[in-house]
Length: 234
Image (cartoon, rainbow, N blue to C red; front, side, top):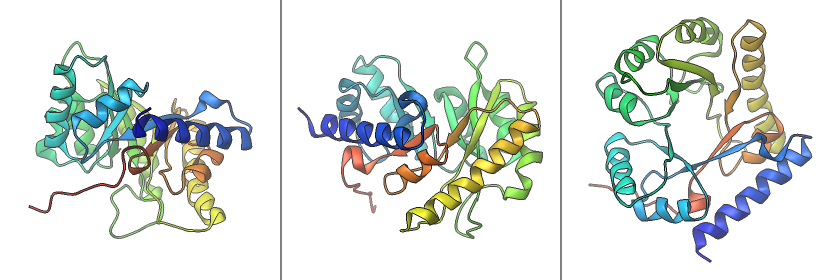
C-alpha cells in the first residue's frame, strides 16, 4: 500500500471520528487534497486511492499539473483554486477550475463570471473571510461579507456556495473552535438572509477536528497526505 493511500485512509478516519463527535453524518465533510508543490505523480497516486478533489494555490503550476494528469488518463477530477487571485489571472482560473475558494473582491468575481466559458457549469465560489483580522491574511472583513455575498450571488456563470477562512493559528482546541464558530455564525446569517449557501471551507491538518465540530463541509489537507513540502527557492 502506498504512503499516500495510507495517509488518505488515516485522514478519512479522523474526519469520520470528528463527524461522529459532533453528531453529523460521515459524508457531511469533503476532503480536499491540497496538492500544491507536489507533482502529477503524487496526484495520480491519490487518484488511485480514490481521491477526486484537489486544491491548488499557484496558477501556472496548477495548469501544468492539470494537463499532465489529464494526459495520464486520470478520470474527471474537481480542481479547486485556493490561492490569492490577481486580476490578470482570472481567465485561466475561470477556464480550468470547478471551484474557487478565495474570492474577496467584487471585481475578481465579475471577471470570473465574464470569463467562464460558455457551456461549462457555473464556477462554484466561496468568499474568503479574514475571520481573525490579521493584517497579513487575505480576505474580506467580516462586516463586509454580506454586501459582497449578495453582489456575487447575483452574477451569472457563478454559484455562490459559501465561505472560506484560514484563522490565526491556535494550539488550544477551544481557541480553534472559537474562530470557526465566528465563520459559521456569518454563514448562518447569510442563509437567514436568503442566500442558498451550503459550504464552509475551513480546517487544515492542525485544526481539522475543531473545524468539523463547528460545521466545516470541506477540509483542506495537504502535507498530511503528500508529505513535507519542498518550495522552489529559485
